[in-house]
Image (spheres, rainbow, N blue to C red):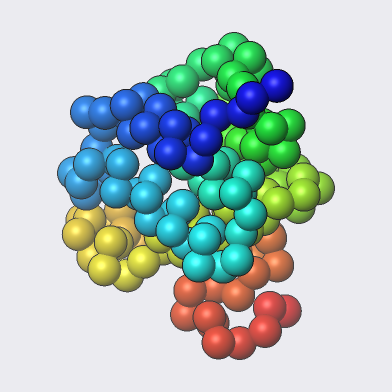
Length: 157
């Protein structure tokens, strides 16, 4: 089977999220590009970079689960996207456990959290939203055993 190239995956992701904005009103594709770049900078594989481009597509209803199931993508990409896709009503502990159990998913989620928790990005939000998201991201860092944004230079623990 011929799989989609990384450039094709990027194009699909950008088109799927076209018109969407993040909580600060920025084009959503900027977040996708930042996460894909973060995976690349952390030494991620082509499959992990492809998953980074698609990491929010199903969760945000930009692409359907059926599309993901039938898309010409390597099984590892599909597994990572499925792992990092939050499910309705799912406890953060269950979500973190699924990420930790899926090869390659932790690096994608780490890059996602790094961009989401970027103080510059959070400073564009109202104070209450920024504080709520900062706490949410810090909790996920702990559940995944990652150093928090403020602890980037310190070992997890």
